[in-house]
Length: 204
Image (cartoon, rainbow, N blue to C red; front, side, top):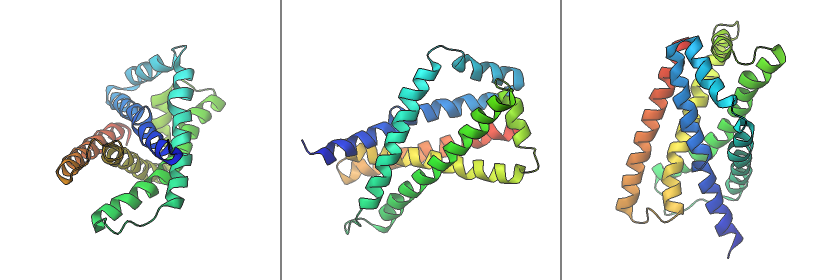
């Protein structure tokens, strides 16, 4: 079997399962910001208190994410313009690759801000308080801008990834099927983005 065929499908698959599903779960947890510090901290810590948490993160999130990112960069470098693509398809194609690079950088900063910094400061577990302080610090404007664009990039990359996943795996081969999947991906993008922005409005 052609190795390029396999790697492209693995790249597509890891973007949805498990990385994309973890994104949806992570955004769901952020809705508890509106419930206040105690409930939010309890919800987040209930995941990290599990002895399986570190293994889940490493093997089901970080490693697949790293694989997806490295292969995505390789595919972007090797990409050739398809003459059969319409302008909108070309736009989505390149936005997918640009957003992927941006989201990877955003995740790095997000992990440092929400994981490494609290551990170094000895405040791990007080997630709500740490986020609230970051959103009201002297650099709050920069933090807010990074999160606004980072969230937008993440929700777009995942939602549009549903569209490309269905085409890559032969789920949507006809033009009519692709139009339906695109409509679904747009709906997912709108719902996830609104949900995420609503969540962070609790500490805005």
